[in-house]
Structure formats: structure tokens, C-alpha cells
Image (cartoon, rainbow over all chains, first blue to last red; front, side, top):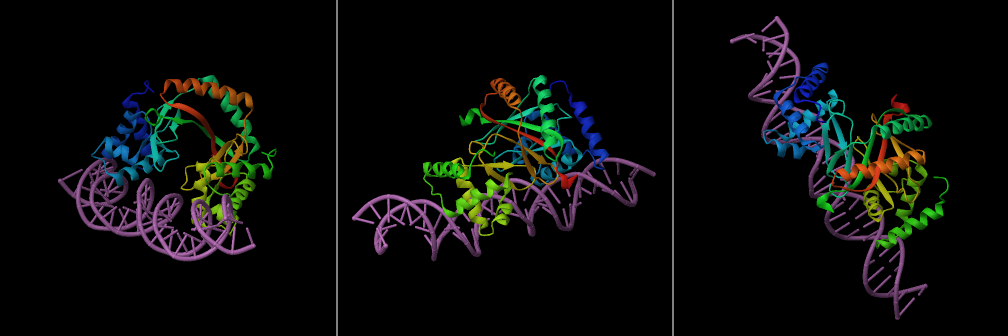
Length: 148
Length: 148
DNA sequence: TATAATAATGAGAATCATTATCATATACGT
DNA sequence: ACGTATATGATAATGATTCTCATTATTATA
């Protein structure tokens, strides 16, 4: 997560937006900056709090645009707020530990050996359902410091 | 999932409800029956469709009661509907494959060797965050037959 | 098995995160 | 700079979920 520079993120997001016929506007740049510096998925209101120049309705609209373009991923926990983060192919593969009490999230990673065996097993398991598997999502569920 | 009988499920649910000061009413019995026979997490409206004697507002209320008692688990996908299933300790540990297009879900299981190494790695990873880890949630993301 | 006390139900109203609308402003190609 | 297409912000609308409350069911006890 430290190896990717701001400039590289900008370039990727710009390319994704342009490919889908959208502009990399000032508001969208600020949005990407907020998401990048947070280091964890944020709710709409956390985003607006982080950068008070941003407007709720525009943030919602642009998060959807960025998601359609593939630059941003939507995270749902068990609380009532959707959270957003930069897509993994822009940053790097990681997982979330979710507080089952307040919905707060932290990022973490697993050894690549574990990731590999997981992927193999998932493909095998998927063959038994009739779904086509594209990806996986592994979350740890627990309690954050302030809820303990 | 085949080893648990209806009577055993009933007994467990009754016990969980009574422990938390609730009754195992007729409506709650029907709800458990619907969830049990579905074999996959259901939305509120899927539940009401499955058993037309059930009423939307009562289903919502009772799903919450059952969740608080620990008999039912809430599943959120990326679509706009929350889904519910019988808790794992009543049936058995399993995972979900979620259709990223329509939100439909199927159940699947992994080899216990994979589950074990996963658990070990999760504990280790959690030590680096400041969360206490209780559980994990592994979903495969893909496309269901009717969306392919 | 009646009774009283308590919890559950159903119908509808209320809530609130998210989306849609639309007049105005901004960005891009020429 | 100009004209056109897209983006923005303020506000209204939407819809899944929750809340309310008068009525009904369940349980414990005599």
C-alpha cells in the first residue's frame, strides 16, 4: 500500500474515468485524495467531514461514477452505511476487519501462501455451485478498540 | 446441513428465544421453517412470498428479534436488500457465493484444512490491528446462472 | 379452565440513507 | 474565446426498514 504513489493512482483513475466517458473533475480528484489518505473504507458522511468542500449529493453521485468506472469499491457492513475505498487493482489486495458493534473497518493482509490455497479451494467449491467465480471477499469480524 | 433435524433446530431456536425473554410464537415458527427450507439467505420479500400468511412488518420485527437472540444472521450483499439465514451454530459453518449482478446467493463449504489455516492466519493478522477477532466471513463473488 | 399479566401481531405512518431532478457552472475540443 | 457536453449543488423524491399502537395471542397462576 506504500508502494503506489499519488501520481500513479491519479493516472489510473483518470484512465478508468476517460475509458467510460467521464471527466476527472476537481470534485472527483478531492474524493480520490480523501479515500487514498484514509487508508480504510469511508462512509459518505466521513468523506464530507474529511473534506468540507465536498457536498453530500455530489459525493454520492461521484462515488457511483467512480464505482462504475472501476476506480472505487463499495463495502457493506452490518450497519446502515455503505462505505467506499479505492479499488484493489489501484492499491493492492487486502482484507477488512469489521467491528460488529459500530461498523468501523480496518485493513489487513494475509500471507500469499494462504491467499493461494484459498483461491484454489474457492475455484473447486464454485464448480459445485452453478456460479462463475470472479473474486472473493474475506472479512474478519470482531470488535474495535473503542467498542471493547 | 443434512444432519440437523427440524426438531433439533426448533429446540435450539426455542432455547435461544427463551434465554432472551421472548416467546417462540407461531409467526416465528413459520419464519424459521421458511429460512430452513430455503437453504440460502432470503430477503424479507422472498420470505413473504414463500409464506403468504406472513406480514412484512412482522417479518422485519421478528427477524430482528431472532437476530438478537442469535438464531438468525443478517447478510448484506451489494444490492439494496438485507438477507437472513439461520445462524451457523444452528445449521453448520458455510460460505456464500454472491452474484454481483442481482445479489442472489448460494451456500458452499470449504475443506476443513483450508478453514484451519485460514483461522490461524486471521488470528495473526488481527494481532497487527487493534481489533479483537471473533469470527470470519468469506464470500465468493461471481455471477449466477441467470445473470451469465 | 378462567383470569390476569405480558408479549406478539398487523396495518399503517415515520424515518433516513440514497437517488433523482434540474437550473447553473465547469471543462474540453475546436 | 466559443460552443457543447458533462459536472455540480440544492433540494425533492424514493423506498427499504423501523416505529407506533390498538388489538390479539400466549403464558403462568389460582
